[in-house]
Length: 102
Image 1 (cartoon, helix red, strand yellow):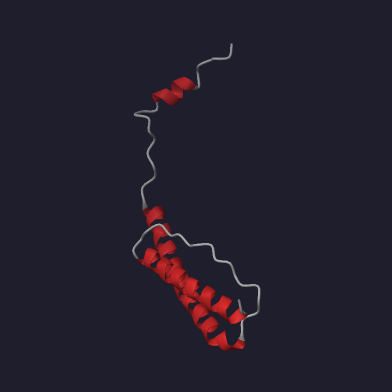
Image 2: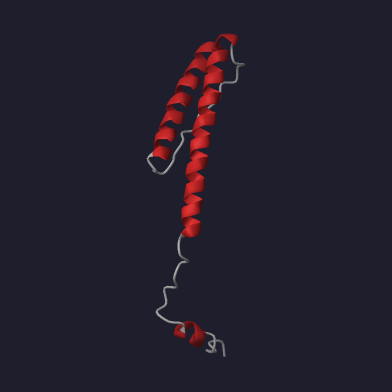
């Protein structure tokens, strides 16, 4: 397999994965990203434009994911504190007074 073919395949898989990731982020779904193996050969000069486009797409998707992450963090910070599962504080008060060891 030539370097051009390997890198073309990688860029196609990367673009599909980034577009899927972007859709997941925008639709507020759990995000998953496949494992992609980068070809060992250097990127051929003929694919330089494609490399630049992939970097731009990666940058855009990352920015949207960061915006979503920050929005989720703000939602969580604004949420009321989690309530104890205990109906009252009596169980905790009594538990500290019991001597179960001896």
